[in-house]
Length: 168
Image (tube, rainbow, N blue to C red; front, side, top):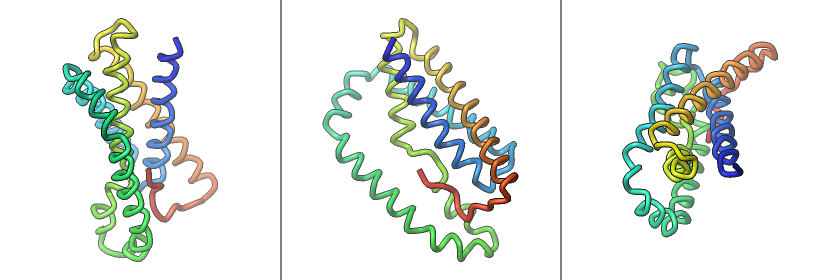
């Protein structure tokens, strides 16, 4: 039972973080729904692709978790350093929308970790990877959309205009 709660808690935390990022972005509601759906689909796709390689993934994660964390940290530091340039280019011709697109995406390691958790948890839960993946993806997408709408509403009510999306 604890494992099920841990999976749902991980889904909740990642969806809240992603929803806050999308809610403070320049995306329209329709784009937020599309992006959240794509992220959910990505979880299902990753889980399906790697489902048959459960043992290889476990070995890989044991060996390279530290290196992966270092690479993710370097990427996040790089994105954080780009914030100054974002503010100055914001008055430009929309270049910031493509240049900083990756700044508001959820951490790819977090998405992969969630998909790998689905792979590992499916046998424990007694369901197939596809079924658990779809449930987690649906919950993730709905929570991302709800959090993004709440963040957008809160910024509207407080008249706060974020200069750049929150980075992951």
